[in-house]
Image (cartoon, rainbow, N blue to C red; front, side, top):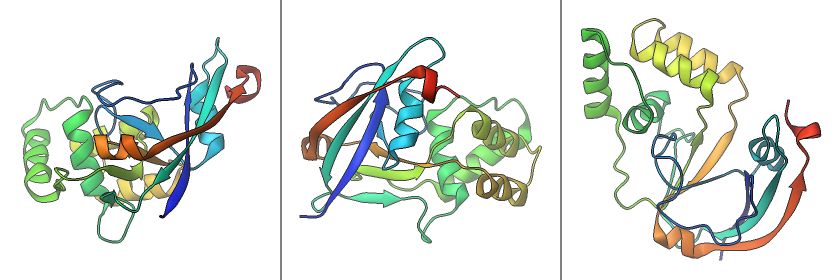
Length: 182
């Protein structure tokens, strides 16, 4: 058994995450978003007017098919092609529509049998870089540079029922907004 520990930050303690929940327009679609970085989960847990919780899980990854978008097998264009399928982009120019078509045909990984996706998270500021790239405002070099200069963080996306079944709740902690909402 190969096990990792991951964290989920939210308003509530989530002892048993369920597939098919969450927003459809998140980075990798509907599923359960976690991180191995507890401080990132603490930031996700709170907002300006609300405290939150971090739930901790163990995940047995040995039986799972995992795609790691940060591995040398992939580049930023693979990540953007997945974002294009899940987030809302304005494709209102011929250049952006052609770029979308090209990325979809040449850089979309087959996620059919994937249980877990490991990759960048596209918070709103970094999503704007992806949007600028697809609309021809910045180059691939500028996009890659912006992503490497920033502290995007890595998220772990639980996608399949098999992955949900491999999650084991390990406990939780309260997260005060006064400390973690920056």
